[in-house]
View 1 (cartoon, rainbow over the protein chains, first blue to last red):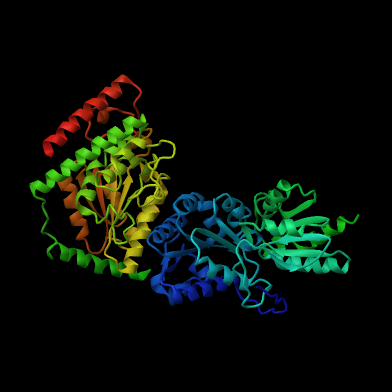
View 2: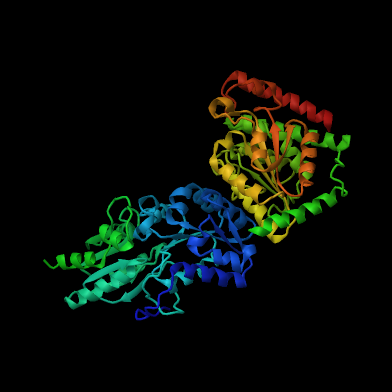
Length: 318
Length: 311
């Protein structure tokens, strides 16, 4: 079970959630191994090299090889975790993940850092608005967008018990706290963070915090919004969606990703196939390439702020 | 991963001990052993031909060019248990040029991983023997392959893992010369060389042709041995139809202490059957002409006679 703890503003870096979770795993499981592609200083995984030198491999700037080496390690019983910036463990290595990993029934755990607008100064070349869309087409892949530090640690620790392709994306930097330390989750299950009766707002990743802020703001304006953290995009919690849309006037999906192929698309598929007749608004990146700028600027530029959610919800009243 | 290189030295020390502590002391097979391998080569070659002819089409050229290598591996060098294909202490074979599946299937059937009747099901609906290797479907196939270039990284991962576990197992990588067009091979070679993964014996099947023609005309590989040396590998180059030479090269590689090792097989696409060696477009051969079918039948007859003589 989970509890909320949004008052805690003592946020830690998301990358340290990953590092500390992997280090914890390595204390109890000598099969866990970390692979980097020359971004150890950026990901903080250099700390893993220091704490567990015989369970850390730097493959150099060679992500395709990193995926293959991870698959080879999986074949002889290791539990590999790999990291790179989101584009380089999605677009760049899609066939390696697909064939060396998934099709061959190997296990690879993937941390894709700085997805979507969180790319900031690395700009358009390093931007992924399509990583979830790509991974969703891989049979049986598990796809997560971590909402905060506590959830990220839980995701990494629980990946280690599973076999297959497991992908989690998140900012490297600190993001707002959502959950109380010790919260437990379940892959394939969404979390209702706030009940409401007018609108169902389904968000994932860093935008969960903005979704909660938007809901609070709308509450003051007389609109009751229910908020779900759909941290696990595949498998998607269809049952929860179909249960919670009852009596709602509209559904909003809210994601740091293209509206093509991500959370919004996945929800649309569920709604369409169940003939719900309830309108869905997908708030996400509208078929655009990325660009350079601060994360705040990019979040506004691509229409991913809480005010976009609030404005849309208010527009429904007119 | 500072430790892998150190472990490489430890492991190769063991390897040297296995060759009586004298690196220069080449292990020469006796005539009986050589005859045994020549017999296995003939059987594998015969089954490759039967398997592809029955199917009606298949990757004949690149399957035939590694027949003698597979004979040396499965007839002498490898540690495996045909009755327990997942035996954890086995040596691994990563046939990265996955379209040469029929060659590996024939080798596996001849040493008892499954019945030879399976060979006649190549590519049939629901078969356990697909044109490209699938580790989930076929007992004895250690890794799926077909998307070229990926096997080198897999072998690298296995070799690195063995070093970390301090296991004295070997992984044998078989890549094609055409496959070297794929950049991922070279990413993996850098990794294998840097980490001195001498427990990964990398074979490059230099049969000089790829699907669209001669490698030198498609993408010139220039001198593959020099390239591998420049990447940091100890290299040997041997005639690919010479079981003794292949075996000696493997023994030599197993005695190398502190670098990655590579054996370049000077081979012929379609190796061992003159008609198919001379056929220009022999990457994939169709048995839909009287001439091709007759050539295959003649070769089957000759190979069967050879097997009878050797047995």
